[in-house]
Image 1 (cartoon, helix red, strand yellow):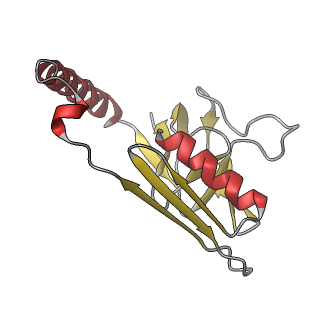
Image 2 (image 1 turned 180 degrees about the horizontal axis):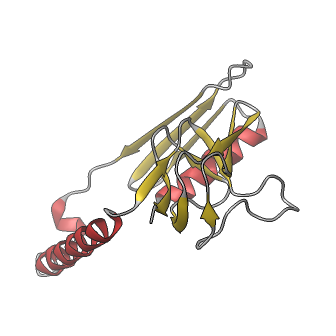
Length: 164
């Protein structure tokens, strides 16, 4: 189960009105508790069950995975160098990220859109309130780092902007 599936499960449980859901799989235990009060508190526990080394994989495959991990780190390092010339716009709050003001409207910005200070880039819903997120810089949107209707954390990167 990957992080997107877990996030979808959390959203589903929150919308369903259930106060607690437990899910146990071979290698994963998840407990989601939602507050029934108006505070909107939501607690999620994810616990991975360690598996014995012999069952996980044959020892011959381990070097291949290490090589893949190393090449992945190199690719991330290259992307980081490319991205260093851009300004990162981060989430000022925890909530749900929306690219559009409403489902039937077009997105606030797309890759390639020129923006100015004060332009609305997205909306983040937190505790049933929709907060417009405005740009603090001028430039051009190079990359949108979060998918529409995804949960975001405080200080999570949302957009990359080329200031030139």
